[in-house]
Image (cartoon, rainbow over all chains, first blue to last red; front, top):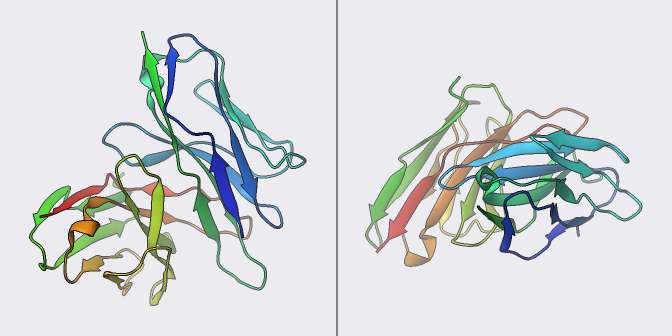
Length: 116
Length: 115
């Protein structure tokens, strides 16, 4: 079935370090891919998205490229800040064959702590 | 802009009690979802709805019920609360287009403890 796999956390980085959070997916067809972020005590909010192969989503210094050949959507940031400490969720959205309803599948989340 | 509103924010229940978690959205979204998030864990889908009058089970529906009588509201009902239902509950909504590229909007969550 369709699924999303993320690297295990927690991840702890020093301020200004480079961040990569790996995300791979299994899906039929052409899903849209998303990164959501959850700050402490809050609900999830969209960080960025990409809707077709080779698209790059970007926001707040974060980037991710939709790689169909490797079924990946890795999240990167060149220089993290303390305020980036949060849980990051990779997700896909697709419409299964012979249905008219979308399905959204989330990865397990990766906790990031950035220390000064 | 209100977005997705959940109430209450916190609640403590005794085992066997019942309650309804309220969720309303003002964006005219057709899709609505209920998720639970256990400490250190990801999201698990409880129920979802693709429009008024249409609901379906997610991964972990046991012990919960939903209804969707209007586009705006999607309440989640716990009939006989159990300690295993201690969790943070999130409601979300989304517009749906043919392109499947619409994002989810989340509420701020309800922290529920069953003692």
